[in-house]
Image (cartoon, rainbow, N blue to C red; front, side):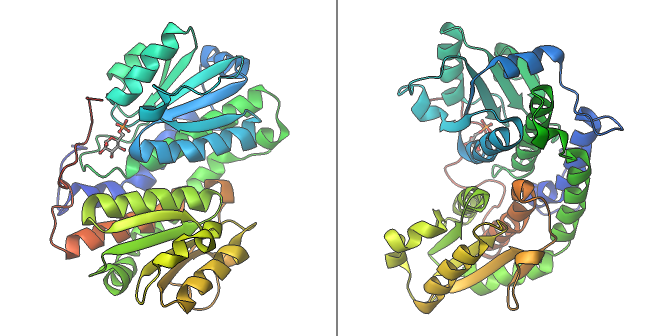
Length: 362
Ligand code: G6P
């Protein structure tokens, strides 16, 4: 069955490998043969009636929410922002006139999110839960629910749920943008792009040996590591760092590449790993320059870039894709880096210390 380990040593590796299949499953679930995204009319109307979307989530799902909010603004011209559930519930920001709440949650059981849901429902605001568990508490208690179709995720460190969340928010952004007559949404062949991304993800999971060598070279014994990027690459950097922290216990951080010079470059020592994520055409040259500055101070720099932005000597080159969907591909080698860093240190990849898959207490 879906949750069985089969011949895999760990669920995490199996779940990383499943990501292309999950992309195709989402396409089958939410699009028709013309590439039209099918959401219920009620949900589409509720979203279109809002003047701002509030994504509220925790952990990896929060990192997916950052991408999701950006996609809503780009393709649906819908103001959107992402919040940590554990902060939002007790320090609610000044809300827009017609807010709608989107809860991204793999488990659908995260207590920090539920307390927000209870509060915003009491305020009378519409709610949507996007979850991998359609029978979960948050799916049942929200006005609307969408299924991530990722299949059971067993490893504590979330992988396929993250990419499913990014892809699902893209599908919602497309449907909402089309309903709102946004040209960028009408012109967006998302179904085609998600098919290409599934193929790109496949080439990346097939590059395990390459990524394993990179992990050995940069992460084998280090006590810390930094991921840098700008725009969506920054959001990927946050998630990449979380993966490494969770399962290898390396002190890892994701930094907005331009902020390095405003303080964090002080952390760079001889051999400090700095992984530069370069898929954003607008800022590629800037991020590259930041990586070079880190290298000049002794950092062990790895560069992961999309093909048209790649330069000789880059450590991993990813097929070109719509930069707005780059996190779907870029995160895959980062998941593998974390996996191999943990494996090579001899840890239980699927059951990291101190962590639970689903946190049902605040
Ligand atoms: C726990 C897990 C994380 C997860 C977070 C949010 O802390 O260890 O991997 O990202 O909860 O979980 P959710 O089920 O709401 O996505």
